[in-house]
Length: 76
Image 1 (cartoon, one colour):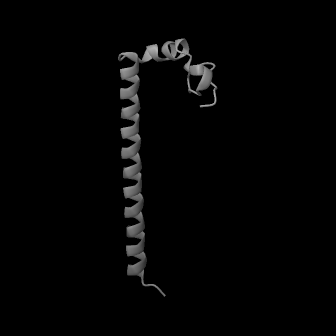
Image 2 (cartoon, rainbow, N blue to C red; image 1 turned 90 degrees about the vertical axis):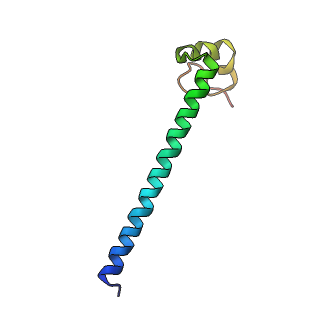
């Protein structure tokens, strides 16, 4: 039978591990979001509104599936 102290320490340890996982996941998500935004800005000259017309004009929607781009339901 485990003592109350052991249960408390186990619960605290689980809480700490979960907190670390949440912080790591949030950090990775934010880093990815910033990287994607930077790549989009580089590809469109810093004007995100130009992205869809550029992808459509270059034929990207023919092969690629791109969320937010009408008709971009390709296989890549």
